[in-house]
Length: 295
Image 1 (cartoon, rainbow, N blue to C red):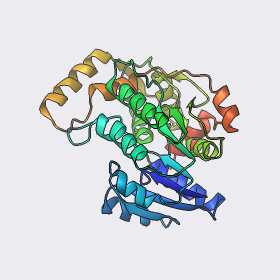
Image 2: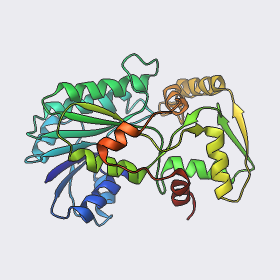
Image 3: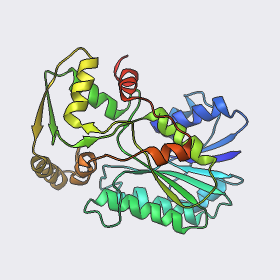
């Protein structure tokens, strides 16, 4: 099989390529990244992959890079926008370019976010829903896998959780918010399985095996790290106020209201249908935490 992967230099993209190299060594992979720097970092991983530097909104460039591909894995997306990279640029415009590239592929598999909906009050959720709809309105059947917080070795979410787990006092917004974190290796496994599904437009809601409060998740991480953090819950309204100020004074704020809304979303989904369809056995949360928190 010949595959095209966009956003290939992220944590999940690198894991996916490595997994394909090991389990499907005869597959050909074309990886699209946006810059020479990203290409160099991907090439340093020592993977068997054809890296192309193409803008995600360049339909002609995508067409040229993707000649002969059978499946497209689209991993481009953000939860925090800036003036230089808005939700519309990262989501809708990249999906439009992919559709307009007119590649003769059989199937697109893309990652989305749990909570995405066209009527959502959250701009990120609305944008991701619009992006999914653009792909599914195109000529190539698209499988959307929507996931919550993804925990993987060395990624931002895992580092943040480790920091809170080691702290004497862990501050967070709305500590009773429900989290249902999923292991990055399980997401990669889901993508691998989805690639082989009968191509059709579908949305799969996938999450980890446990839904628990943010407070409980931090305490669970602390126990694993031989610590008992005191979790202090801050009102989410305070977070939105701080984010609003950052948005007013910075073109690239460290936190935005939309980002907070995504992180604050209550995740509590029944994963039975998704795991059955994908033939997936989810990694238990305690095992995930051991893998990502302990060096």
